Amino acid sequence: MPALYNLQQEALAEHNRFVSLKNMQANLISSGRNLLELQADEISQLEALTEQSTGRAGKQARNMLAFAAGYTYCDCPTQIDSSLKQTNVTAKPSGLEQLLHIEATPNPAKHWVSFTYGLPMGLSQAVLEVFDVQGRLLGKEQLSKNQGQSLWDIRGIKAGIYHYRLSGSGFSQSGKLVITE
Image (cartoon, rainbow, N blue to C red):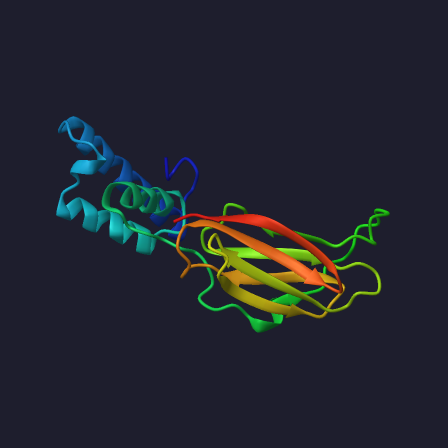
């Protein structure tokens, strides 16, 4: 197959890593074992694939290790660039520009959540607050733009249901956020 597609350098190396992974899976099946019965050398082989491969072989090896051995992988940035914490969002013309709105995405979330908000005309100050189910305040941020996004790192927050609220000048809107492990 490498000759058929004229694979060279990194493409050839990635192909060889993929073949190696498939051979390991075939050996598991032929020996009557499943992923939960990986041996130490097979786990080492999968670990090496996750470090060497950015392609399909590496992704599959990561998934196998996560499923069978409880490994956790995160492709998240290690630190949020503070200039990205609040950014302007271009408004879509809709006739609803007068309403306060907030949305949390993704929801459910695992590593990061982005709060996209819009404030009513004439209101340029608001507060975004996040609470646990007991009503304890977990996070609070002053918002000073009519619309934008606020990014929140939730890697240190326990899985569960949380509530968020955007309020200012007598206006308020809230929502529910689900954090998963």
